[in-house]
Length: 433
Image (cartoon, rainbow, N blue to C red):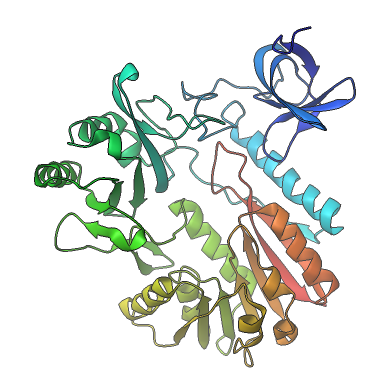
């Protein structure tokens, strides 16, 4: 058999990245596009000492769970990898990943498993980074997500997971960039959408002409989105117009303002439910003092402050701290304090002012919160709500909280922030034993 000849593989289960797992002569093979219980013909893409990577070229015996993907670009575009199964399968799979990692890596079985937080399956994505590439052989400029496992931009006319304000306008964006004086020097468009206004950030490697700026300005008017340009780092992001409008979204009856470059949750409807569950888990009382670590623009801090005596948000990025302060003022909340501190540094964490704090919310980046959960500063904390965007680092941190900090994992459940993908987010409640 030549290396590139398709091979027949029986698929046993799905990996944590959503690929089918099978074996050939005892060697593990990860197969993109395959489902448990299927027999497939697959092409080997890459060989490694301990495993191989492959993709399906033919499904011989399809799973009863398999459905027709909605998007014609599925399999080529790297934006989604689970469109070939329905929502129920996706939710069960993500829950299994979370519970399996907790049991296998942390030896933890939660007291309760919560119902998944779920929402719209399509048109949900409000933040994204779209690649741009001038490809004359394909008719000019391409705008979209990168192809799966490649650096090429997917040649697509629509994205159904993006908010339709942008997802339905990819051909217009292609035409806009093609019409600029430097189409080959625009590598990226960043998307940031609020409840009302939204923004596009055009990254450019060479200066724009005044005519280019006029075209961007007119396009922004036509599609009712704000337009920004970026010539270098984040400090070079500027509005195409003199007046910069802050974007906003609403949660818990509050208006949360943010700049296009600042972190907010991708899925607005899921975020509303996520905040509701976090508040329920915290079980807030009038006299509670609550800490919100990795607080960002105040997404959880402001709702927490509405139900407690005092809330403190801790965040490592100074611009986000400033935004949190302005959001508190925006909503006339004076029982909030925002502190800029590096939560990855043991010394900074040791100096956190948590003397009167008994409840914490953690919403760390993908790297997790190992410095925080390892710190003695938690000794007075009675209840922790942990919002995770990475089940692997969450399992690691959960193990530390349970074994070293005397907490119990009372309840955990998945948050379907990114439908049609294998991305697993979760929210969990820990109580001190």
